Length: 256
Image (cartoon, rainbow, N blue to C red; front, side):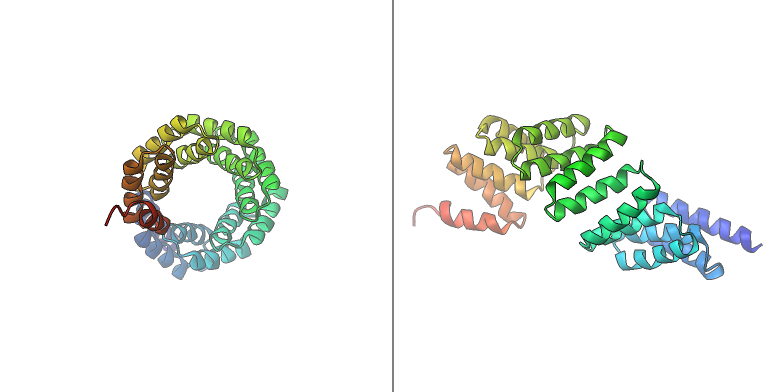
């Protein structure tokens, strides 16, 4: 009877997860763990649900228990790496990803998160190498391609960055951040019309993208469309970008 109750609770918790009722799911997984404190399945998926609601400390507690129960649960190691990444503990994330890849060398997500961590540590060449490994395993991995472009941009490899952004947009044409990054690159290359088009598309895809308004305003200002620039900076300011307030003060006060 106890095993039937556990299965019923896990199934109900899984259903809650499927419809994004994560707190209700956590309650049901917790009931399972009260009955069976070493239930690996319930602990793992409770950690997953806690991650969705950004209870990263709770995630770590559950995952440590999962790994204690099953030291070869590489999915648990990966979620642990993600939690450390959220805590900005990038060296720890890299160490965990190293361990995963020693045992699961085809884990593209471990390469991806190791790449993200190397990027945050400004180890751009190492980041590119990790993203490339992820892309070899999963050629359509648009996030890895996009972040490889960011790393190329940081290294000043602008043509490589442009190729990466083009590919990321081809795979994920609804990615506002990819359009924004490409717009900024075109802006830097003084290809103003292309930059303007990409800023527009970034805003179409994400109307609350404060950086897109801010940067489009700067582009319009350099193109001597001062009223357009002020409109964009005003919108960026309304969305909370402090830098836009500076530009409004400098260029948009008008005659007294």
